[in-house]
Image (cartoon, rainbow, N blue to C red; front, side, top):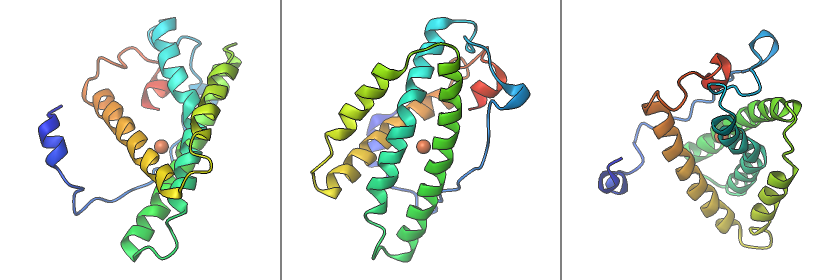
Length: 164
Ligand SMILES: [Fe+2]
């Protein structure tokens, strides 16, 4: 990634958030225990990432919603679309994480750690949660960009798990 360019690039004028209502890993499409190349470690890395998402996305939604009232129409529409998108992401991560726990993984420690980190925002001004959301979504975008631009990362994944 060209960091100099990334820093200098503003939000595109034509940016539009398009929530996509997709489902993964249901019914016949359920994945195997070590869905990434039968590799328990690689699988666990992505499983752990997914485990953090439902609560993280709930935090994002709460953080953004606090700025909905009085927002100009374009921003209000973006907040609504973002919320819808995050709700669908959460639904898919909850389903995915059910698969993870069904495979015998104990996610309780990781789950507690997510609570601990998100609790840091409690009692602080709403803008702090919004700033944390922006920072975390930037990390998400960096990870997503890398994941989508280099097919080696998910080569050999069970189809629906890789798509997810
Ligand atoms: Fe999301």
